[in-house]
Length: 389
Ligand SMILES: Cc1ncc(COP(=O)(O)O)c(C=O)c1O
Image (cartoon, rainbow, N blue to C red):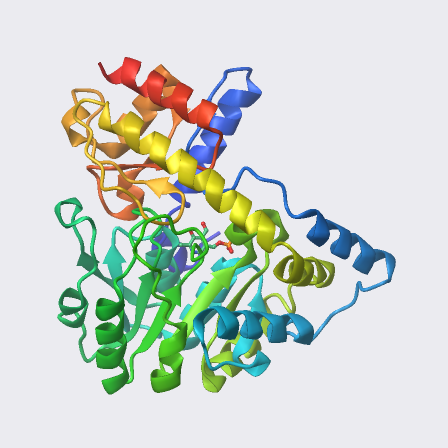
């Protein structure tokens, strides 16, 4: 059986691969501390669970429009208008099977063979792979730990070419936790608008911002640059609803139409009763989001302290999301050279699962998720310390 060429262009998601390995070790009775998963350790809001169960009991088990439940589309738009002063209505929204499907459908809708998509590096593992699956070529803009992983507008603009169709931004960033500064964001969007290049702002972690620096969403820029600004978001992290698979995109009508059409042939609507649960979360679970934010803030302070104590490890403080992305290359030795070997070494010797930085384009780093209890963080970092000393 000959598989399609496009399969040769992508690899398995490294984050899911490490999680799988960690789960296998756990299943064989070994106590592994798993810092690899990008998944909140909180329960989904009871109001969402109740609303989904109620929807099921009431027989809300049929197809909806491919773009999703109209009430939820409207509620998502209203939420962005209220929080960020965005100009959108429900007609500007497509509800998708997680943020991942929104991004994939956007890639299919906007990127053709040979088109370029500019992506900051380090990047979330899935961005370049989706671009490749769509036939396009990712073009990376490097940021560095020495500059706190700041994404500078000039660096992005210098990579725009005749072939650029899309720029993908991710703030707060997975894996660095860095935010894009408002000035840089505005400059990037302005320059892209001049050239008819779409800006997809993945703001999946927008509710988890810890520092004094305010989060700059791309949403209000849609007032001036409505033709090119798209925002992607998700219920997965905001409401600890990863398995529900509900995300969304907001953007211009032609993009909404194209994504809706693709979705109508790919998944049809996202699961109907899950959308009712998401609707309840949006309306009733704000206090849970704030509770999670408080917990992440405490964990972030703890892990920053613990990392500062590790010899040979250098880390820019994250100001958003729930990851740290320390540079660990000074800990590399024979047999644990590069982020893949080093991560395997940590799994085997310390029984701690992390994601190799190479998955995000940086082989000198590893990614640690702090979506776990402070006690697990303390134990895991103690184990790493013992293993590398
Ligand atoms: C940056 C980023 N965008 C999008 C997603 C998609 O999440 P989901 O498909 O669960 O909504 C993730 C998940 O890890 C992510 O880290």
